[in-house]
Amino acid sequence: MSQYGAHRAVFITIEYAMEAVKQGSATVGLKSKTHAVLVALKRAQSELAAHQKKILHVDNHIGISIAGLTADARLLCNFMRQECLDSRFVFDRPLPTSRLVSLIGSKTQIPTQRYGRRPYGVGLLIAGFDDMGPHIFQTCPSANYFDCQAMSIGARSQSARTYLERCMDKFSDCNLNDL
Image (cartoon, rainbow, N blue to C red; front, side, top):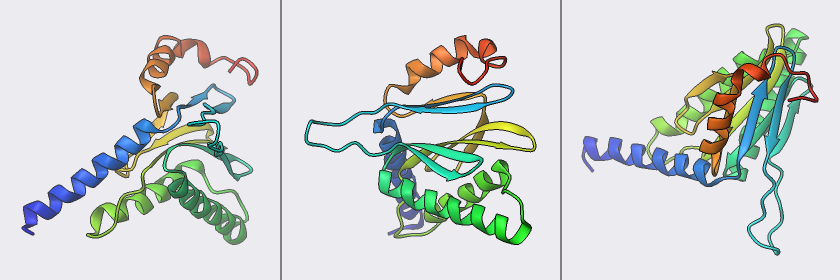
């Protein structure tokens, strides 16, 4: 395989991983000045299929919602839990949300740099609260991450994003029940 062919193969696998996120259940993250909220659509493919949790607890101040491959999400969630525990043990304080998202970005980038490994096929919305206030972060299989006011990922997420963009200024002053 030529050098060009190897790079092309990596980009194709990232595209497949991004497609897995687009095919996953819709999930929405939204924040105000005081709160951050995650919502996931409960969707079973058939009556025989079991529903899998789409919102996972990471630490007292962080939760995630997932779209894409659940097995990859659980692997990343366990990594996040371990990092939060390490921070509490070593520094005796919770891990800042932005630092945790940076660690996830670094971890998800490794498979994109190595031949023979596939990217994580999951998109995460990470809601957290720290000294800087509430946060909503989006992570992608391509190892990109973004700080957001509101975001939707998964199947039919574009219509949710359009609604969130139209109503963005209303959300900043909402309390927990209004969100």
